Image (cartoon, rainbow over all chains, first blue to last red; front, top):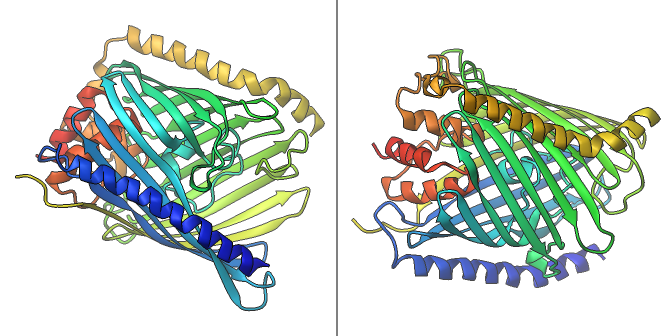
Length: 356
Length: 107
């Protein structure tokens, strides 16, 4: 049954990934005629290998996550990110041979129009701007821990992407304070690479660059089937004086709510960031979810859950990063341990030589 | 736990509203004070113990892009404009920050 499903996945998803890639390459060809010397299109992203052991079940995920960015003239930018990964696990959970499936997804494929210094309009498929995690930390070469927070599905409706239009920019952009806004509308789509729900929402951020403190709030309304609201708040603090980063989010959905708070401290004050110890970055995340009512398929834990995650990132030379983490999950539906180890390599290069 | 649930029922919509009001208050307070704090350079033990960001471009990079990721180890001058446009959309860079970072990345 699983093999049949796997074969079906391959048949249905690969051509759609190919179509998405062809569309991206068409935009790249178009951009070749409209470039200045510093605007050569780029291919960026990362390749990674993830190994996880979640409550006794082991699985591997080789991942390629390419990002393509191509300027189109002075005011337009086409950008996309894909996630191509294999998922390998044992046939019977923790025994038998390993077998796998391939999953490809288009995380964003969007066209940006820089209308003014204070307004950027986006059309296409984009990352749903609810909270901070989805837009800023889901890239595999950025995330400090392999697993997303438990409350990630609130507001992002599990896929994390929306198909529609978005307006974003800065209401105030002074050296001491930035007030940023984002508003979006997403249409419903069932296409395999472009699944999204009909929804609308906004986010406001208040950022103080002098202190590197950010406060923000998000709201999303799901406009399909049973309408419901999601609201959230976030707080980030990254002091200038020492390499500490504190990030946190709270989100409230229709059937559950929760929070996460994550702190990292790179030991770069010990003989610099390129020293043996300076490359180490311990990570700690505490998170909790509260279930108010059953919400089948909402992607959140079925019962109240507490989880503590302890991670260690090691920033090797040449954009390679090794990450290992241990998580302890305490839940009314059962406690468990999660062990993760991953290796990622980040790449960034121009697509061609460009004009002199 | 029941108490937490009943409290959180009311707290849910109230927290974002409170954050919004608090942010507005802080924004108003910042706007009312002279902008010396923004021009202050970080201490020598700033982010990742790099030398203090003496030029505005490096500071703008650390204040915006550097909040999520480290700078790339190598960056060809041919792609700095593209990278900056990508970051303008992602990090909502102000025009001034964009100019400063471009100068910093393409000295």
